Length: 92
Length: 484
Image (cartoon, rainbow over all chains, first blue to last red; front, top):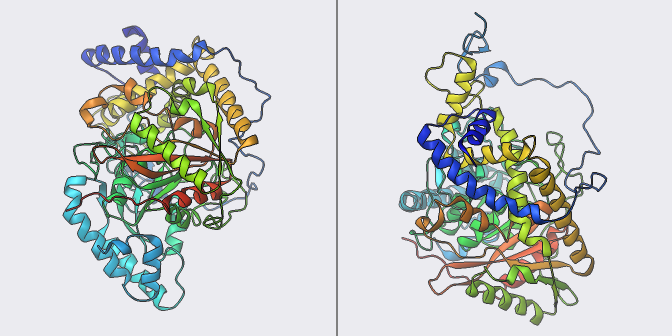
């Protein structure tokens, strides 16, 4: 995997790397992708009509209003002011 | 501790007959933690005050004659399960100071039983790893040899049981994270069928694999915990509505006529000789108990590791996008823009392995790579499920090693991601297919390190898996680690 690809993936994942970290990560990701390439030799297509055993969505709960979590609990792990999350200025 | 009093079964009897009080039991474990956990490092947070208060509350219930199966039982909880008011870090700097405002459903259920929570156990960061050495706070050691890893990601939960720092614990298993550390630490751990246990309040890693389960000293004890954490939860739309049976019900039933499959690929090259011999010897024990051994094949096993890592990393990359430094979690000290705040917070908060999984997941989902990687892995997932379905048409359960090698020294492979991923070969297919599986000790290698026997069952047939594990345990004399 080249450095440009690592930079692109880092951007998608909202991650920053120093130049030194980028080099090391590119080398590690190359080895990892080599391992992942194993799936390519298996000649099979995904069948969208096949049953997906893992998910049971046949009984969604009724659309009934419930009390929300109190604001102070929602904010207890955040930098907050005036009952709101604080973020950097986004509008000049 | 009196070794006859280390199981849930024995403690229940001792508590109910007043041979021991809930506080005495809790105090004994807290003393063990103070004595041993400086070296083992199985806990990230010890909740001594809370544990003693819970023990006193449990004693009142016991004294009133209303005790439930887990009332007063000292337990440890993996640090990716939300505990209201108790720090839950996921062993990550990004959640170092996170105090959940609510309990996971499993905690509501265990608290309803009146358990005593001793603390939160260490793990690989965000449950990504098999060594507990990516923990930002406590790199847990193996109680059988503290130069070796305890496995992972639920390494703290397994080591705590093995070192008698709790009676039982909860772990979570996305690709083997309950079974592999249970095998490395010589204890028993079960991953239930996907959807058996609600994940509400479990910090999400890979949502189509993640499952919570117990680690304990025996299959019976695992069943005793499982009995009280399963069942439908309106907060988790994927949780199953299937009836929750008594998971101990089949324990002791004869094995005569049962068919046990041995897929040859699980015993092939790459599996340590001592492990192969030990697991095949365990299979012979089943034969002597009346079960029939059936040879079979699982040709797709060689593709299982990449298929698992592609799907789980894709899901992880999406799940971990919620960490932005704004709503909760680490927030960088200084940032001039929204974008910079998110990038810096994430880059400072996540460790190297978590970052690699995010990169891999985004790669697998990227335009131009999606079909070749994620699409192909999803196709393989269907193939692996079909192969399991075919085996289960003819057999009641499958017997395999839990791991290809025993616990190792961290310097041997922790710094090599590819080597770490390949070590998951024996466990990941179970998660891919959503099946229940248990690991219980079946021997020790020449250096005295534990070997795990894995029994895989049909969907929702934990009862048979537990029955088989217990049947073997009745014939096996486990060797406890040497504890100070």
